[in-house]
Image 1: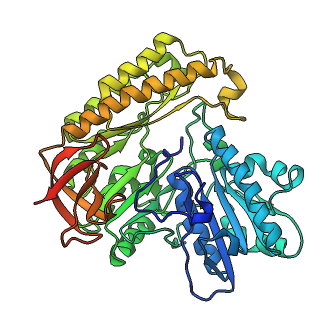
Image 2: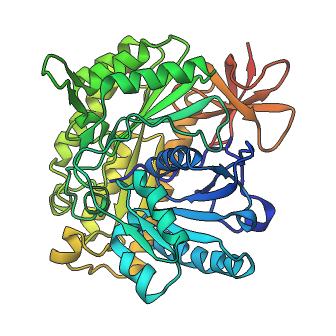
Image 3: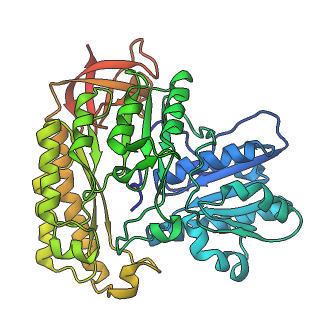
Length: 477
């Protein structure tokens, strides 16, 4: 499954005219180099989509496009879409209608859909609803210049072919909405896990890993440009495996993680997402060895019941998952943060099985959770083989119980960090006060403290003195 929806406080927001956009949507920031045409991108859903939008911007910069944050001035509008949940698709459909109203007032504006919705809904977008000019899948971004030329010539254009080789390893991303401090590095594409609820293998194709040397070089380039933190991205980073063409070099994820950590001790390294069936003790020991590898692991459980996990085709059971949590605590200590995804109301889930999910929350004591009720996605194994038989009201009630339980544990995890000194990477001013700065500690917890003379990008030692339950408050020491 894709990485969770995450909104980072430092990102530029959409202009006032677009204020109704959901909080998890990112809008391209403006670049002004004098190029002839303007590109506007909205990115929906997971971190991989945001990273892909940076690749698209790089490809189109070479074709004469600057980016803009104002959709009304754009010559080309692209929506990089998500199909993980039904709500995400509904949001995109509504947004396309709004954009088409702009198009009526701006002759020549082109509108396109990228990403996970592209392959699944290409015929509806192009032929039935006629609300877009081009549809481009995640592995066809190199073809964008040719497809745009085709649309400029008066035709509709589509390329949703999936690739077994494409990794975009040679493309230097344009850092959209960048704070100049943190950046994503995509290390692999696609997914070989056939979780029954997930559409990603069908929309992003089979798993392939990027050349390890290109990843390390991208990290070096980011350090040279002043960046202080990178997040290594993949649908399942633990299954990363790359071999050189001559077969003399083999790199697994633990070894890649070490290589990136060694780029600079001042470069923080994060990663997402880990799969419980694949995360190894070797990865955990590598994290323990390097202070600059952040002590935070996103380890989606999806359910706390072994029968439901089998229906989900997660390929592990509850005892296996619990053992991985114990390994994290044993090797990295109790302060290592763990987050999860949890699905409420999956097909045929009983009330007792729902209680098992609640008890797993109690066992793992997660720092953060990304929780949703089950949304059947067309084309998935579950949609073909399992009945979506849990009433919506039951799903919503179970989800709220999961959220309430998780919030209790999150508050407790924040509270146990009070009285400790944290190394905080400053990301920018606090949203509520220009006299305070906001950053994150190794555990990915937000820390807010008085500004004094500190600047964005500084590492600051902060003594946490209290917590709001969603952030730590403290003083620099």
